[in-house]
Length: 319
Image (tube, rainbow, N blue to C red; front, top):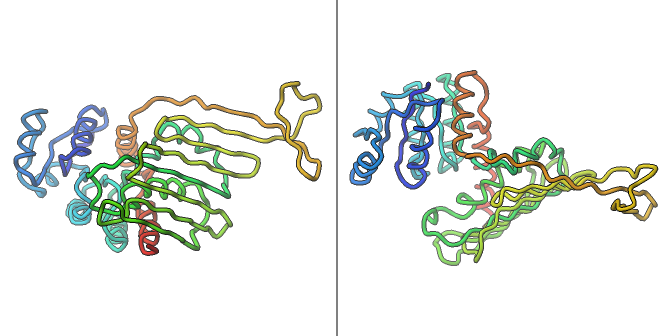
């Protein structure tokens, strides 16, 4: 088992502490939080060891799980990597692309592993269909959330939209060539609602919308490709695959058949993949343990986390 420690014991940090404690891949050594009162409260309530400094925790573990505010990600990760520790770092990877690139280079230099917490990669609705998404040419995403003061210290692009940016970059085998975007600040000092259009070198276009002032929660993505349409509901954990195939010689009398202007007929098939229930955060942590133990590339590498941040920053720069 890998000895692990958590930096940050806020809302998400406490979830990580609980799951690392449950995991059969890690031995939870303890945590650090700069708020001593909160740290002592968490230690007393759950029995986790509360370290008195970042350095003390890093020295005591093999894996550092960074669940601090984004502003602190770089310094925490840098300290851990320089001590030869593997790092799991929550999204967004860092505050700036330059910091992310520096961490990406440092893990190579020190021979350690790093993974970014883009948890939607482990959402069962996405994992059930990701292998069916093949060179999509149009993608539409909506990530809407009811207002919550937590997270409003950063633009909605870094708070919410970056999840969909990462998903899109993971399934489109091309590079982004053009970014269009607009954003509006309604309640916060930074944009609360944003729309972006990404154009890829291979012709794929992705349209993304994110809002944290919605009256309802929604996390849906739709992928359109040759002869197929795939929808993923990340919130309800449902997915659907609609495929079009050539009409057989003797189609079923209830078959749905379409005919285009050229007279070509296609039959529509509906698939509702079986969705396996899971805990996505536990799965991403265990996947990181697998990468460490097998010396393999993490599911969401620091390079991928850097590229998601790069596109997010380009979107913000267009506002």
